[in-house]
Length: 279
Length: 323
Image 1 (tube, chains in turn red, yellow):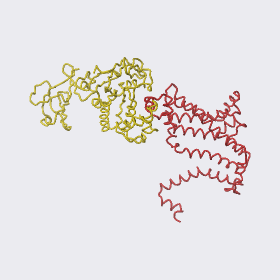
Image 2 (cartoon, rainbow over the protein chains, first blue to last red):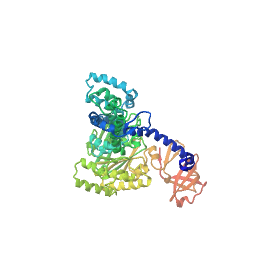
Image 3 (cartoon, chains in turn green, red):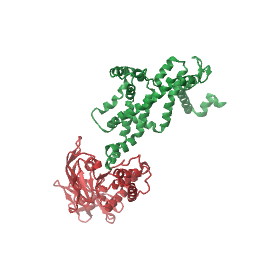
Image 4 (cartoon, rainbow over the protein chains, first blue to last red):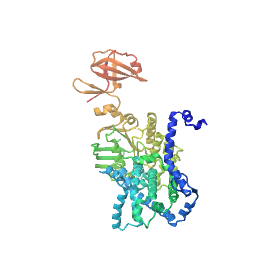
């Protein structure tokens, strides 16, 4: 039983290891406890607040959530919007990223930094200002309006990460392609783009996932015609029992986790860190 | 050499950069089958000229002709040149075969012929059997071989080499330049080679252009440049050189191997005592203190062995230049 006593454990592994163990445990608890709690509540039929464990286990809320047509259709809508957003964002931002990486023009650095600006304001304030413009342009309550909001949110990722990916490509590799007879467009398609692909995939992932979970802007611009998953989530939380929320948030999590697992080989800490260098 | 056909001609070319670097009024003719080297320290403009020939730098003024046709204004892909850079020549996401075939595919060469020509070319640069590998699986020297093969495959009118060996270590470097020289002679191609390594330039070139701060200091064969350097700058840049001040203010430039030491005639014009004798293999470097000047002398071992430190000697110069 010596291994189970803290004192025995302390002397068995040494001071350093012991402290590391404590720090790691606290971190794991902090990180995973809310998730564990979420999973637990999702499989509760009945739960009242002060208790640690649910009073009754079961799949009641799963049946309920999956039985709601509006919730299922919101999932389809979310994916449609996320795909459209990612494609449009790529078409707008990747050429911009290439220009930022390869050409020097006055104010380039300020321009680069300005993408951070939208994150400096409280998002809701920004959306209200955008909403006023959208009213005048009749974009409120339209699919296009929602997509524009999502694309706006993705611009920073979609320019910064690919710009740094482009910058890390050696100029000689592009020049060699021109030298052997490829024109500028063929050079971009055959050499530059494939070499920058890991960075572009990471950026697209962020855009796709960001769009999947975007709620505030969608709520303001698209409600009530366009109810995406996270927008539905607001309704679920406000209208139903506490345990419907966890079920829905697990459903929200599934696509994210699937995409991350599929694309994990591109998501090295290096690609991400290099994506955010300011030069 | 003047009877030979001019392959590449640069006329009154100027190219200035914002920071003041650049080249001015460059005039140069390169003959068919010639190996011409541009030699100079970094920032002297040698790479600028090469990039202008390849189409990677626009010229401010002047004209570039290849096979009597003006190429200035043409983008790199339309020029009959092929360039090998110092490094990062190959596309890391393509196999060696794809790297080599890319240019041929653009030219719509039939598949079978591409297969054959890439194989032959890899054999020429002694890299057979690497078709399926990726550039990262090859060493730096091997990558440069493949890059040279890729350039040669396109049968360029002029092959441009921008310090292709400077990132390699010394042993491989000298081996590669010997092979490059052989390939150049076998295929009789016209080469413009840029380097800052004077030994490399001496070893491979038919003619050398010595450059300094954007202008040509001297154009000549390696022997001409070594034996009759046109300026003090050229003299100091190529090989070892003693610069000896005469009482009348003139400067004598004497190669260390062009000096004879003797014990006998002590009332010669130049005399002194031996400070150090360093044996460097088949020859020795002897440093003589003559008044307030030190003079470096190279002597074969059988002569250097007859001298000793602090011995008084007189010097005579067999060959020298006055500046």
